[in-house]
Amino acid sequence: MPETPRREGVFESLRGSAATLLAVARVRIDLFATELQEEKARAGLTLLFGAGAVLFVSFGLLFLAVAITVLLWESNRLLALGVFAAVFLTCGVFFGLTARRHARPGTQAFAESIAELKRDAAALKRER
Image 1 (spheres, rainbow, N blue to C red):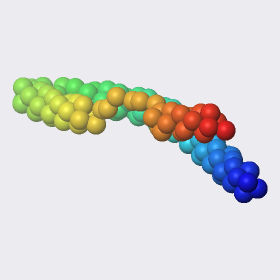
Image 2: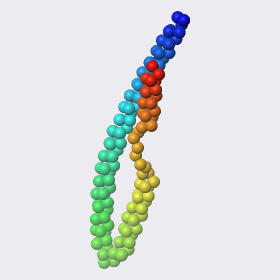
Image 3: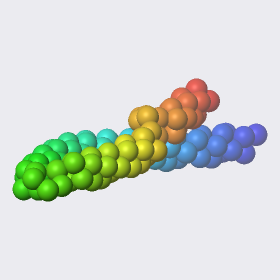
Image 4: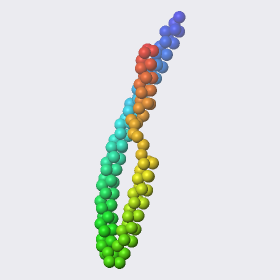
């Protein structure tokens, strides 16, 4: 009979250690998820400023195309307009298709893992 309480003490100790380890793991995963969200925000700002850069470079190219077309107005204005239109449309279609291929809906990072760890921790607490 003296060994039964000792066994329960060992099992209780193991459960407590497992619960502590699980809690530490959950905190680490929560921290990683938070850092990942911050990284997503930084990436969003990078995309915003990148889009601004693309917009203004596009306007610059457009005005350059207009300037060259005006320069060639007397000799080859239709050829210049056609070439610029083809180049801009081709680039636009390429970038649009590439962006569409890379676009994915966002989800909360590690949501399933965090939920599973919470269920494990609750199950260990119930067994105490």
